[in-house]
Each structure stands twice: as structure tokens, then as C-alpha cells.
Image (tube, rainbow, N blue to C red; front, top):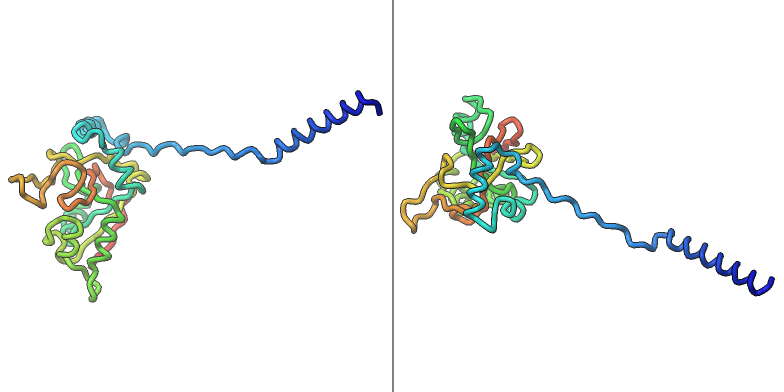
Length: 215
């Protein structure tokens, strides 16, 4: 084999080896960033979208989407009702949605499921019931709200595509403050007076909500 022929063979061999090594998986795998979760405000009608826009402007730069991402990463909410209220306002009326209703919709304050479930667990007593004072303290609400048997509701906002926004003072069910120093009353910002994250859920469907009994 002369010099020229040998050079051609070696050159061809190196090219083949080079191609094989490139196909051998040495190239780092491509990583894809999952798309951001859809805003829960997208599930709202025009009226609620307008309210949400105003609330976000008041809370800027921290709006409902940032509030959800920070405090409700799994998009699940829970809330508590006394069993007597549940029977009266949900069962006996055959309600389709939870909350205080007007001609626009039904309005419901809700907190992260993990927060509610954790508070209920810590408030359990030796006899299998719960301590209303301990539960109220954990959630920043009056103990009277949790006396007697309770019902705990849990709803997956993303799966059920439920309209959700920051609560505002004009919402039905808001307990307005009468003095600057008053506690256990509504203060704008997405948190209860006890520091628990909260959202306003519009038309939370009864049929798609998990209900648990709390003795």
C-alpha cells in the first residue's frame, strides 16, 4: 500500500469511528421545561375576571398566580363546616355549589388542603374528637366556628377547573373590620388574620368535592 492509499484508508476509518462515537450517546440528553400551569382565573367568567384584575392590581406585584404557586402548589383547597351547617345549607337544600350565593355566583373562602388537614390532625383529642380552641388558634378563626362535629371538604381546583381569585372586601361572607386593631376580621392580601393563606373560590361544585367527617 503506498502512502497516498494508506492515508485515504486511515482518514476514512477515523471518519467512521468519529460518526460512531457521536451516535453512541455521549451527547447530553435534552431537557424540556414543563409549561407553566394554567391560571385558575382562566376558569372565571368576565365578571370574576374583572374583580380578580382589580384585586391583583391592589396586591401588585403579588397577584393570584403568585399566591397559588407559593401557597397552593398542588392546587388543592380545603375548608371546614359544622355538621349542622352542612346538613342545613348543603344536604337539605340540595345545593349544587358551596358558599354564600347571590345572583352572580357562590363565594367560598378556602385554604391549602395541607394546612387544614394538618390543623385538624393536631387538634385531635384522646377521645377521637377535636379541640375547637386549638383548631381555631391554628387557623386564625374563632373557636366557636369549630364546635361540635365538623365536615372537612377538599377540592382539586385544577382538575375541576374552578374559578379562583384573591378575596376582596366586597365578597359575600366577608367579616369587615370595624377598628384598625380588630382581629379575626377580613384584611386584604390573601391571608387570614392568623396568617393562613386563603383564596376565594367561585362556584365550588358539591358533586366534585370530597367530604370527610370530623367528630
